[in-house]
Length: 328
Image (cartoon, rainbow, N blue to C red; front, side, top):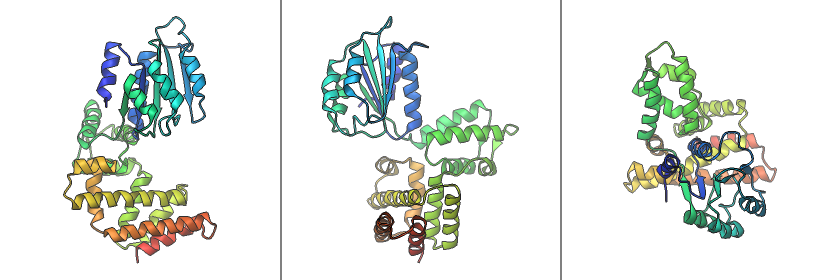
């Protein structure tokens, strides 16, 4: 598997692959590298040799016809394909065509979900570069944000940094936006305190879900319901809240099992799909639940969802009942 450095090397040398596949859950990094590649591959204003396709109804035959068309006064034709689904379910026609790509075309696929066993994924690996974009580790994030702070001639306290990480919900795009807000808010200060972060950085939905689960663990039904009402007031659909609660407990089950097996936090982070600092935060929360309690909550959530889908229970009431059952 190639990595991001390979793309940087290709851009620096001007020697490009016939095909690039950028995939994974970290959208911020994907967009950064998508734009870097397009800037290097496509001349400014060249609409003749660049085409963009998006969605799961793209005609493979149309893509192939375009790829077979010679570029117009340029070295190559560039075809950007976004969230096509070609790598989630194998597309035999595209997989068979990719090894035949001419030097006059470059495909750039940007996908969120892929199956590494699919023929299309394996075809890209043979003729080009496939890069998975995931949340970097805490050290990399600290270097990235530290550079922003250094450029602004500011420092940040340990407590403020911890609160910043919590509020940005393990998401680089949120981090980028919230740091911009934080730097503007503290324009007349050299040092950023926790109070600054609390004053200006928005709590993300997943952070509030974590706080709800913490309140449930503490058997604090009043706080749990207040947080739930806050989410409803922010126009969050009850079933999305339920989905995020289920996701939280599933991640906690993975973390609890691996922690019990004395697996290191770096490995747990990779398996749970989150940075190490989030693993450590969840490890503390996991101590408040047994594995059986978490499994029972997941069964209860599935039952509530079934009752909502069959019209036997209102969405909002379903989530409220689930929380009340958990704090008993």
